[in-house]
Image (cartoon, rainbow, N blue to C red; front, top):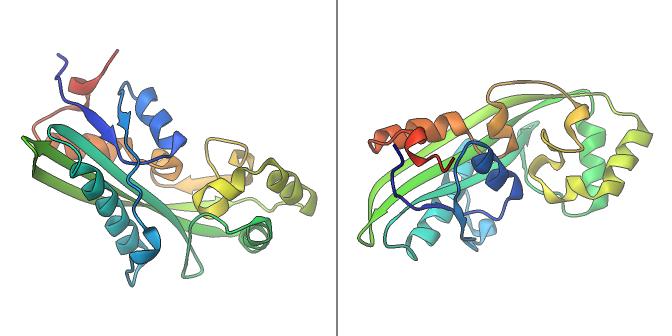
Length: 202
C-alpha cells in the first residue's frame, strides 16, 4: 500500500537520484547549497555525518511536509579525506597512489521527517565500505582521466560507471559506494513507522 509522503533528495548527485529511482522511489531534488568547506571534524566518518545532516537541515527549512534525505561521501585513503579532485593533475596523483591499494569510502546519510513545517524526526548514519583498487597501467589512468568522470566524484572513482573495472572488490555496502545506502534508508524509514515498500511508485 502506497503512502503519500513527499521524498526530497538534498543532493545534486545523479548517482544518488538514479539509485533511489532504481529502488522504486521517485524523489524530488532540492540542492542544499551547503558550504562544505565550512564543515570540520576530526574523523572522516564524523565529517560525512555532519555534511549529510547539514544538507538535510538546509533543505528541511524550505519544506512543510516531506522526508528529506541528505548524503555525502568521502574516500579515506592513508588517513586523508578525499572528495572530488581539484583538477586532472590531482586526479592523476590520486590514482597513482591508490592503484593496487585500498581505501575506505564513508557515506553519511541523514533522513529528516518534516511535518507541519517542523522536524519531528532526525536520523543520521554513516556507512563505511572498504574499496580495493586494481593496479592500473599508466595508459589506463590517462584514458580514465580523459573521460572527465573521476573529476566529478568523491575519491576520483565510480562503482557504477567507467571506473568500475578498476575496482577489484569491496567489503561492505555497494550502494553506499555509489552514494547512498538503500539498506540504511530502509532502516531509517522503519524508525519512522514506514517501510520502503510504502513509498514505492511502481
